[in-house]
Amino acid sequence: MALSILELAEDEARQRGATAIRAIAVRLGEMSGVVRDALEFSFEVARNGTLAGAASLEIEVVPLATRCPACGDVPNTLHDLCLLCPDCGGRVEIAAGRELEIRYVDLEC
Image (cartoon, rainbow, N blue to C red; front, side, top):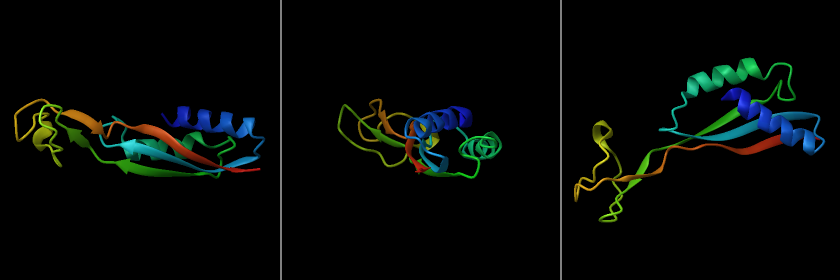
């Protein structure tokens, strides 16, 4: 995942004629399947020898948010990852928390 983030950031940096990448900010959902510590470690290793050699990785964690399409309830928490609405028993949808997206790339031109 870190390699993909770096590749996308470097492509953008090259298109804009940047000489270096200062920071990369990402949004990481709690249910994205990506382990934050592993991403941070991989980024530290993978950035060496790239335009992002001295860049920081800024991670915004997006909490899990659900919504029940049947009753419109928005449960704040789910216990034991039960995807059932506590009010009506209907199946809830995950509205947020699966994200893995680049928010911005801070470039040095």
